Length: 458
Image (cartoon, rainbow, N blue to C red):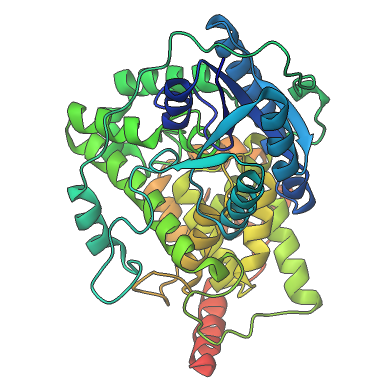
């Protein structure tokens, strides 16, 4: 019997999976393989929250494959050697995988291709698996990528997407290929207490529920902090338990302002991937440097630690940072506020914040995390790089009754609405009774410091 190998990476699903469909079409049997790549762990990306969520995803994928007569083969070590060894063991002539877009992933893909070809095997890389529109498919005149979202979105919207693929009914797997035991969430320590469950079934269940109860109102409610009305698809998109192509197609069929806004958010995700693919260095370096001389020293380190711990004295910032630790996730509006506060109000290097987010976020990846941080810090693609978000004004607008703050900062649970976002204005005795810190810096002082620093950097 002929055999092909399908390498799962950030596409842990059976629905709308072009590599799996191609592998099944090319051979009598397939080996569905996932490699726990030691290089990913060595680089620090295998954080507790993502490791636990990954364990859920692999267990769910294995269960779905078993329902179809197959199973998932899991191995650990160097990805290239594990794929080549498994292909040789199974007698697979072809290896299929989804295209990836970071410098690490493309380098690994090149190494894998060369190693397989040296063994007389072929590597097939499939686009539009982890994105809706692959990097490089739309480009402006005179450049290899779009640096501004709005013109990118216009072109992105005109691209004809492929039709989503149904999950296969049968996945025959050869008997002789052995793998190791599946990882288990309960074996991972340091996980956020309210980390959500992973897996394709969970992701598709979330989509169905959101289509019924949240999508139509998405345009009106997605910035409402207390309502918690965002889709929360991000972790499933990061691990590929949901297909961006399928989501875009389904949202377009549904129609309406809410669906249109969701599609725009999926385009924003693709936008950052095409920037990263064209400029891999922006994973660490400024896309557009402003000559920042970020604060360093003891005071800056103390401010950054107060930010990490949710003890800045600004309730909406502290609420968001505590949500991050508890859930491994943060509301999108809160991500903007906390990033602006660290990079601009405290004037601490955006990389400090990006590293903290990457540790805790279950949806944390290089493209979304680093480039959104740069967008807020003003070193990325934002056309207004020096704007500073006022956390008090933003809290009044997006958490007017203080419900979000009270949920995550219980010290302020009984504070009156007019003081909940500015507890330092409470009468003396009431303020003294609160176990809550004073602001680490005045907003006007932080704004003045940032503007002067940016002026010096020009």
